[in-house]
Amino acid sequence: MGKPHQRTLNSNNSPFKYNGKEFDEETGNYYYGARYYDPKLSIFISVDPLADKYPGMSPYAYCLNNPINLIDPTGMEGENPDGDPTKKNIFIVLDFNPKDSGDHIRDKIEFADMEKNGWHGIYAQNLQDAEKQTKEYLKGTQADNILIQTHGGHNGDDRRVMWTDNNAGHSLSSNDFKNFTEGNITDMGIDKINDIYAYAGIISSIKEGGTLTNASCFLGQDDNFFGYAQELSCNRINMFASQDLCTPYSDIKSKPGTAIFSGKAISRSYTFTAPDNVRDGWKYYPQNYKIGNLPDTSNKNVGINTKGFFTLKK
Image (cartoon, rainbow, N blue to C red; front, side, top):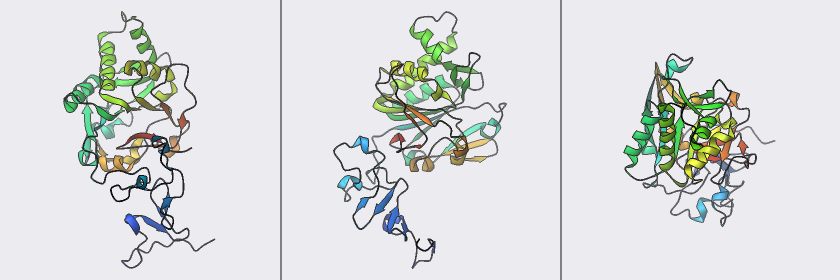
């Protein structure tokens, strides 16, 4: 074994060197977050976690073999150092109910540094309000990625649900989608019908091949929910959902009664499930997903950044 890594931070012996990345003295490589970079060979030493996006490129290449024009700050993929002003990423948080256990710390929501880190934050009272604000922001254009943060759980039939109004107790389940698509809406109620239209409106605001992420506890345990959701999208987009308890507290800085979502933290990539709560992981529902034909797409190693929601290698 080599000598223990010493983190001497004086100006003459800082561990942060090439591209500001930490140098590992024992291996001679640089740590980029998703993987290590070998400066001797000018390549990464493990496969690109987003290799599927670039079938004609070596999964070990640095900056898509274009280091003059591109950077790779996370080890995920080459990107324009000035960002892509045409990309639109929306982070939606529905208002929480302070009467619920734990929600008193996020009775109000604030966003910090979202726009300059590639995101637009929307704090909505309910799903219908979220759709309204989304449409107003996009002004007839479409988003690349949309994330919806709200409670998830189950109803009396033990079906997994997404809460569409945390204060009023309104929710949507796969059974609601089924009744809606089959025309059995007599007993649904106008709020539930309007919630389905709102969800469909948010989905239609995403570009083809874009991503919708539902950061709602346990919702990924009901594949049918996303089968019907894909029908609403005409199988145009990709979807992600958690099968576990979503507790993103490590990435929310709180002050009394207010949760502050950091765009800087999101742009660096992170997950929505605390390590202690990971059991089954997140589930990926690709564009071609239809009820009954989903292979095992569970993955405990996932993240989100301005490129969207992605899975790392298992």
